[in-house]
Length: 497
Image (cartoon, rainbow, N blue to C red; front, side):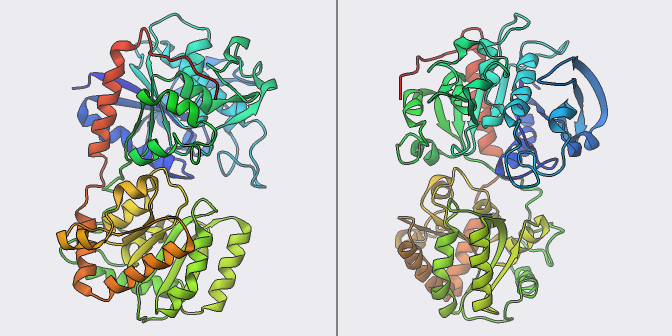
């Protein structure tokens, strides 16, 4: 029985639109919450892919002028989601990436594009739709960050305000725009304060959300602690420490129906934790696809990642000579920084048969890599949660991870005690340096050469609960905890930081 209504507001939702882990979370969480009595409607921009996917759409509301053009709110279903699409062609009817133009630069009107999403969501929160008012609005990242701001400073139908939860998927992306945009964003001057959206003279979308939301979550307990430090707080650590009593970390899960090696149609051969034999055929398919030698003395590692400094790709490059010399192989799938792409291309040319790369992103190929590689390398300098290590655990691809964020929370290091207790699932290294990664790889090769030890790591990982069940229970409890306080949201004065 449903007893709580939540409006989830996100700029991307899998399987409709995806650039990163935010889409996976926004796409999977509604189904995980449904058995817990939480009914989620998902609100997102009406990109072309979204509008074409909506089934039996119904017009709910029209705006004559929503940040520069006509807009309408459409209800319908799409890919199993109960969807509210903000159809505003002047803002969203564009090809390609939802945030970037064809040259890779931010759309110049991104402030208006995502303010419109928050503005419309706040209207829904106030009772715009007859017969529907959410108990809680769940805003994801800076693109939905103005929802609690519009609820606090906006004008509209006077009703009891819904509770608000903002989830930070990556604090590095904050949505900061010039002060001159304040009027265009339909925000009053009194919102431009330390207790509102003001951030070092700019309008801060995420900063406003962190100041005014009833609750703040991020995607792992360790990351919730890390972002309160100067080193990893991205300039917002003072505010986050000030609001620490309203901040919590809830690990992400994954869709275990989509990511299931026993039924995955994208694998060359399927398998489960009891019988791992199918991984051999997948490994052979990877070697063929990446032009790797058919045999090697060491493990086949994979990297599936954006190619950026944050992801530690330079550390992976530095580790290649040791990896190849020890008989290992690397199959990398990703795209990003042009200089890193060039270095990786050169590395593959220097190590034919041992290093192979595919630039870009290929969902099917990412499944195959998880289904056949021996280990997945994730040397991120910071990682709010990470999903690829969860896919690795699910598929028996042993994670090698930096000790940070959600990587630290989800992988049990194969140290002597954990191996003796039979609970290890992967390898952690710290600090996040080339030297520490080299030491971790030495441990990886030692364990790989003991088949019984390696198989135990695989089976332990595959037995790990990486589903949405426990995270969904935490979210449901959090949503319910703020419903009684909707009429008088708990807000704290913000100190100068």
